[in-house]
Amino acid sequence: MNRERRKQIAAARALIDQGKALFDEAREMLETVKDDEQSARDNLPPSLADGEGAEKMDAAISELENAISALEDFDADEIGNTLDTASE
Image 1 (tube, helix red, strand yellow):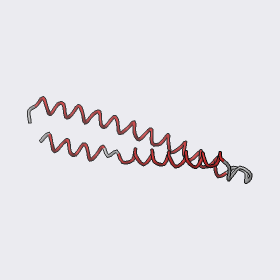
Image 2: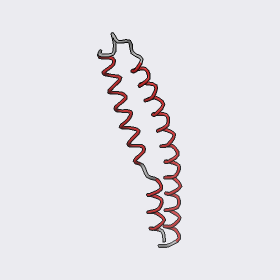
Image 3: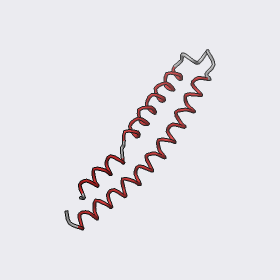
Image 4: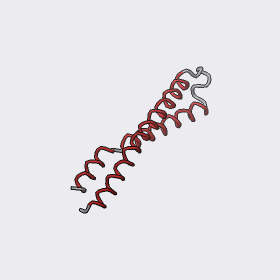
């Protein structure tokens, strides 16, 4: 592989590392939102615990968990290792 393509791979890896930092920050934010929503759900009065609002809260919590899981699946280290191998 020539020097120019190695530079392009290095630039791509730098962007991936920046993306990882942003993904980590977004995941932390979403975990806080999910925890706050779960706390609010847990503290609903019994008269509201089985209502439509509670169901919407449960759905939101579930979707937040899905989003967090998707962010956790992003493996910048694996991508970086693969790029290192490619640029050898």
